[in-house]
Amino acid sequence: MPSAGAPGPLDVLIRGKVFTAIDGMRLAAIDEIAFAAPAGSFTTLIGPSGCGKTTTLRIILGLDRDFSGHVRLPAEDGRIAAVFQEPRLLPWRTVEQNVRLALPEALTGADLDALFETLGLAAMRGRYPGELSLGLARRAALARAFAIQPALLLLDEPFVSLDEATANRLRALLMEVWSARPTTALMVTHNLREAVELSDRIVFLTERPARVRGIHDIDTPRSRRDAGWREDMIKAIDARFPGVL
Image 1 (cartoon, rainbow, N blue to C red):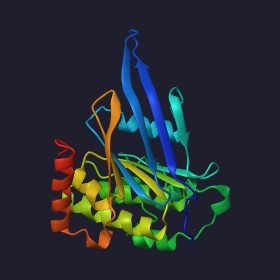
Image 2: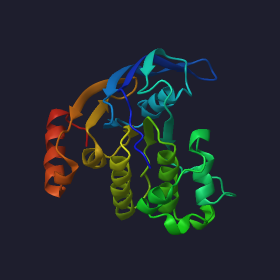
Image 3: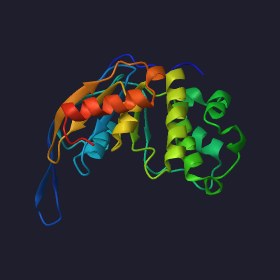
Image 4: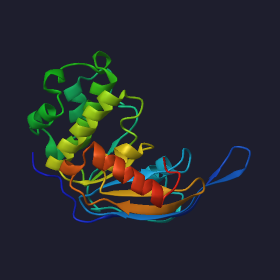
């Protein structure tokens, strides 16, 4: 399968995002969030619960247009894929049918053998979601996202609630697929160790109303990010941004 690629960065500027409750109370969710995800890079958003990380993803996806600022996508006519905490597979469709339902007309009939093989789903293509563990269901969600060859990949805590061994396997699989099909990626997580393992850039957000607390770039090749290196990096980040752990 050819590489998806992405011709430009993701550029995000969100100012003054406010929600209005049923009783008329106004809740300021975001003060100002501004960052860029370089083309073909893997960027992570980290911040306290409720600080606006998922709201940011919704705005980038175009699901929430009530904000001031701008979102400039890597490619104006490029496809966006999203992977959520829940796999959101149709229970009456097989794994392969769920993946192929997302394909645009230009990719109808695409050869997905390599993708399913890489994600360990080759033997599961004819299975239904009810027959899958949560880990396998999330692999199927990743397959669906990469199958459309997106210009931008958004991930909202895709490994949350998994045991650590399963999460580690899925992180490795994500990197294997992403490295073979490079695209601009933005992930939300609470897990600093996960961010250090996967990311080229980490964007730290403050409590609500959110601002960017700081940005930490990582240029160490992933092949050299062993356990000792990760612990040293986490200590360095915690020294730079106290309390992020």
